[in-house]
Image 1 (spheres, rainbow, N blue to C red):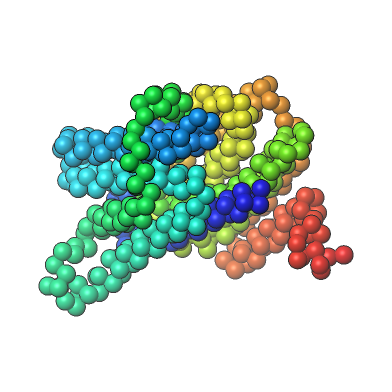
Image 2 (image 1 turned 90 degrees about the vertical axis):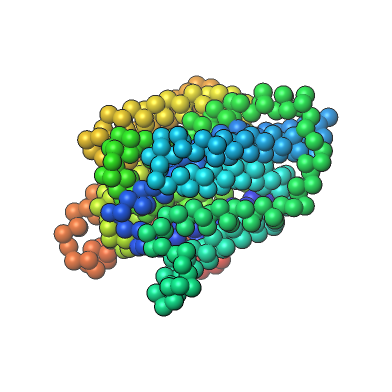
Length: 492
């Protein structure tokens, strides 16, 4: 279990640090690509499509590889080569078809003037799908250090190239325009995708030793069994990712023309502030997951652990929520002023993220019983709700409806998973305690909103005191300082 905790910490920290470093590009992008140009709306939409197709092209093979590589009478290397070649082949065909039919595809998506965006990102998503299996293989072989190194190396190179192109190149071009004849300040969106393609391509070189595994070839019988196992995972993955990106994909089709692209950019920039919640809740997940697994050794310990995990997740998530909404006047400087109109969506999007986190915590019942089709059904219903809210209300209310769509979609998933899960595998969640934390957070948030007319610094001080009340309540009821290493030395 010590090895599990160590590896999970490495995987978790590399992912969290990587996301945080990549998050640092948001101020750069929003400062250089003003909201009124609509450029960031294009970035937001195309990356949403990329996330969707990444799930399609991997078709559940990451999890399937783990499942079959650990089965008796299945050769690990054969399972790896079969999954890698199958995903690689599908990804190559996808990229090839995108290039062959680039005109109708780019026109259909509204990028007839920039088909190169689609060309580049089709290659990026194909490489990403291929690398997803390679990263899974590293985890399978317990090569946590190499996994983390490659993840962080990608981020470092990506950030370095972005800083060079967005900050250094314009200054050189201003002094020596003939030296950098390729540079065009109106093509910054293209440079974002170009840099991504360069970094993704270079990352493949780090897998040269693992690529030798292709020599084992494809086992047709094994592939058939793997596909039979993976298709429910594909369905679950599709419904899950649609819940995250559907609003961004359909937005400009519901509000056509330049206005739709502009509003999508404002929405895309504003929700980046809410992504602080995503990073913090992800950190919590990585912290408690090893404990959940290790607790299986104790009879009956699982359900108690799930109940405790839920309680502490809600405590942690609500604290993160209050921190963001209390200091939104400071955090808004993460994005350019031209995106500030969209900040009204931040609380709604963060609550939707909390719903998603609770849904994740509630999902153990169907994962442990191998009834993953329940996850697909529940996520599918949530996705339908999200689409319905967007289609009905986005044309009139814009990105505020998109935010409420996520709120409604994840809310439905959370509620359905709870009630069905309680019938299938009941867990005694401490609903009373959780409810008290929710009521306290809602009350503190309500009081903080009344402080809006006050002076900036006075408002910050008073909201800090409100946050202190929440922290004191947590310490008094569920997080005794006596149980925290090092700190407990100073507490009697």
